Amino acid sequence: MKYEAEIRELLIKNAIRLIAEGGFEKATTKELTYCSGNLPNVKMNEVYIYRVFGSKENLYAAVFARLDDELFYAFQNAVSALGGFHENTKEKLSEFFRAAWRFILGNEDKCRCYVRYYYSIYFKGKSLETHKQRFADMIAEMTPLFKAEADVVSILHSVFTALFDFSIRVYNGELEDNDINRPHIFNVLYCMMATYFKETVTAP
Image 1 (cartoon, helix red, strand yellow):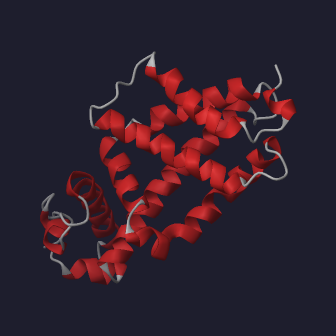
Image 2 (image 1 turned 120 degrees about the vertical axis):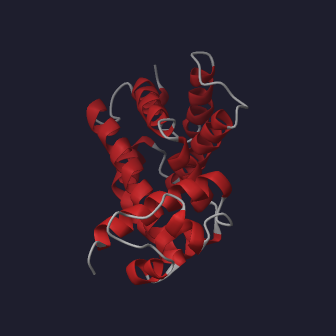
């Protein structure tokens, strides 16, 4: 189909903004194809959603995959810059948190859209398995920090969701992003993990 790549990008861009602003109820087929105007060479209509993605739910999944990829590569780059978590772990986790925090707070629409999808009925059915696969290597890299009996996936999932909950509170104006609150947020996240760390990790 001619202009398919351009149409795909427009629909993904529109979906991110609409879901961020008003959730899935606002992301109607009409709004998805018209909210940012037409492409110069294409008269947009709802049919293109189904031609390009097959369904509106597949469009949502493609949006999440895009945002999940961006998040993963931001996290991966932060870990690579630290050289892993094998030494000075609390300090390195703090640096990793600051990099992740800056990235997440760098685009409100993307953050809100990501969180709304993550907690939606669509996530488990469409995206959970690929999300797990995407982050599997990073989880494996962090697993040696934890005691053998620790459920590392559940622990990191709790930290991950808490990180986004804090970010949404910032966007909602309930929490300031400042030099006082950032260390507090990190300490909350760190304490969620520290109980399960090996003694060699938490030792001074």
